[in-house]
Image 1 (cartoon, helix red, strand yellow):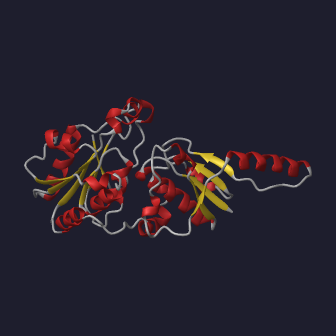
Image 2 (cartoon, helix red, strand yellow):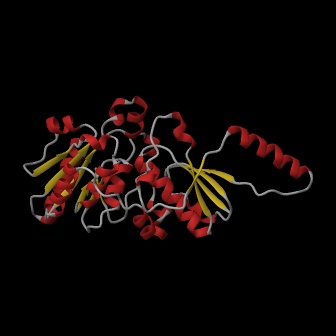
Image 3 (cartoon, rainbow, N blue to C red):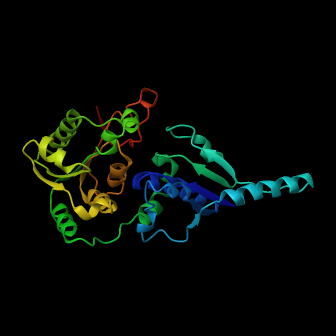
Length: 292
């Protein structure tokens, strides 16, 4: 039996897709394969191999020719009365948690985003162990990590812009978090702890942060390390070291908060999607604080 998980998108999406496939394979005692065919278009880079604890997973790259011949071969066998084991394809029905995954008892090929902790909550300790980050190779990142560790009230704040702004389709689906959201989220943490937190600001548009983000007089660090542009997992690593988290409507900072070992507050926007038909969906955990 085998479970094939199709991996697509950026690092955060890849982690959700891996975690869902891993949990299903673990439950069924099956072998996990990763379908990397999406990356042949060159738009993104497969990044899960940066995690040193992910081992023994085979990469599955189907070719059109082999798929065609397998289909023909299966038809011949069926015509002779010989049944073959087929790997059923399952596409994620929508962005909400799909309880039907608990009924799977056979080899499947999964495709979708699977952005919900319920898909892998039964093996959360395994996922956290496999998603341990490699050591920092950049002195500046190491210095920031030390500042986070020595801060009594560190807060990671993720401001996602980039394609959320520049791509018309992406913007219409996701939208961006307003400055009002960040104001309310920061006030939530200040009110809860009655202290002035130290902010660590992460964004794909650091210049916008410098010009527009209101830190409300708090001490802050804008994390804009040039080397991290092609190594975003280092930013996620730094996020995870913070005590509290104000995340964007992004799987990237979702994982930064989820992988944190600190028992702090995670503030999440109420609207995860701008598109009306998906406005009901939010992948936040019950313990996280939702702010409009």
